[in-house]
Length: 265
Image (cartoon, rainbow, N blue to C red; front, top):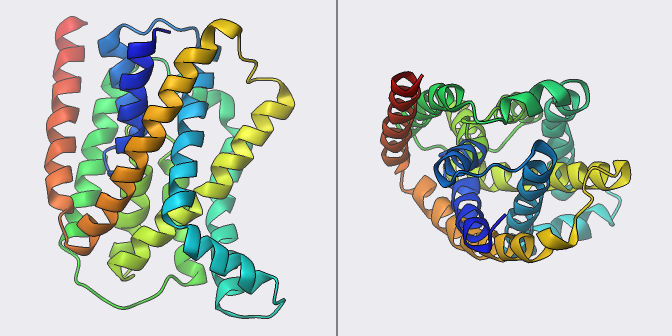
């Protein structure tokens, strides 16, 4: 994979991981536009590396929150930090279940099915539009909310469904405070990403060839830097109820993807 393509795809991943427009969907669209002909394994390695970069950018942005949670856990009390950690664990269960039992089926969807991506972007747009109309509250995420939000995260493993968009929208529609919804959405994915990377490393699925080192590094850096910007921006946008702009964007891109697929078929 060429360095320029890697940087472009890294920027796409960094921005779309946090902005509610589906990073996986845009990576598939980007690969199609750039003519990326990587074999499945190489493409998967690149995608995992980019997700690792955005996970690190999330840690940097929420480093104070994460440190507070860790400190609270080591107090070994049923405090706010322990309760929040339990909610994170509950939210992970649906995605872990799907990842363990439907991994092969999911990977088959990451093969340039632009029509499918377009359709899923329309669903993402609808979720964002509904969430943007929700009223502001001060409600926290409950244990029940965490499970429902986790189901949304599992569904968002489909290319074209925005993970951040689906989880934030679900939280807001459940009546959760918008700022707290964004915070929970970004923190809940960190253990999953590192868990997935650990699984792939232990299974040997992430063998990197020397020819891939420079493009992967370039993509990683691009995703990390753009992720820092997008994460900060997204938190501000959610608070200001600006999700409708992204809903319109998803509708437009989804419709264009569907039309182009049908015309070229």
